[in-house]
Image 1: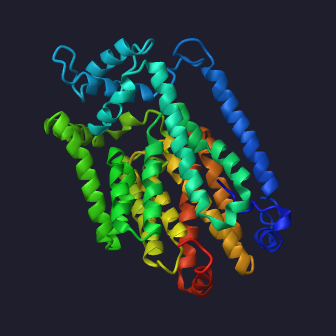
Image 2: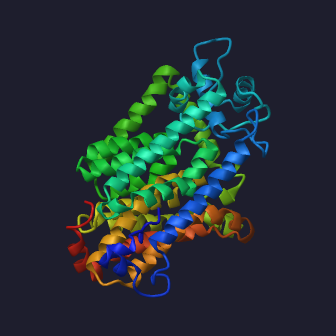
Image 3: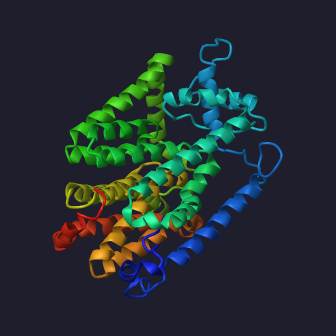
Length: 444
């Protein structure tokens, strides 16, 4: 949540330091405005969502199946339940068979089909929910996702000492966060990815790298989100993190190998290879995708050129994140981890708007850093600019998609890239004295 300036006017020096200066920083982004913007956004998003789904049956006012992507997860769970029944068994990676199963299990789901590309353990995870009627399973899943998201936000907020007095604004902005909104609308699994990243942060904070690796390894169910972390920890030679990640990912994949047999894993690998050669089928609406690959694809028609630019820009983002991380403990863990999360989003080959929920800790951790910096240093353009970019990054997923349909420019990707750069800037030699003074007051 963009709370870099959330202190009330009674907070004295911190607020004056944070809001002093030029145009934007001269009182524009204030706690009162953030509270008002959050309230307006939350009311607009959730009232519209409530109106759209307030229909009898499982189809909403737009004719879409309620829960959208959860219907696929529910079907995968049904596949796992039917696995040992020879007359009803359905192959994990047979899209046509799963479409028939979905139509038989979910009223009104006829004609809906998904490309099955989740690793096979996901079907086992959703098997208990598939025992329930679809409507009840959907409600339970959305409640679980909301609770996981809320607990992760609360945990990170509790680790931000300079935001302790702003609990209500943090809560409001957490509810209004567009990434969370899309998570609920789509019924997706991204809250679990947020839980993995949040757990890893606290394990690293407690100097337990192996346990952090165990948490990150659980991202194998969404492997594209773990690419940046894998490269970064290999680069920094954090071998205990890597060992934990390999162990937990291997253990997770061992479950379906035992339940279904090793062929389930081979089938998954074949599907992933096929999809990698035709990834566009996963993104019929590219404006809802927020990563560097789609950014260049929308701008440049040539696949070869756009892919080359994606690789180069992804490597640049990874290099900046690695440069930030390599300067620990000179930089606080919160800032380093924010760079990692942003790089994870930007360089992921496939990332839809609901996956942006993993950025929730970034807004808290960076805002806490901005306030702490303003408290001990003269206000400058760096802190003021970072505050503005943080504010824009919060709103960008909401407005960037519709705009990019006409401009082919995914503004959210630009804003997130700028934020990575601004996080990297304090790590150069010119800011070393400031960084040293911050070490005693920031999260580490």
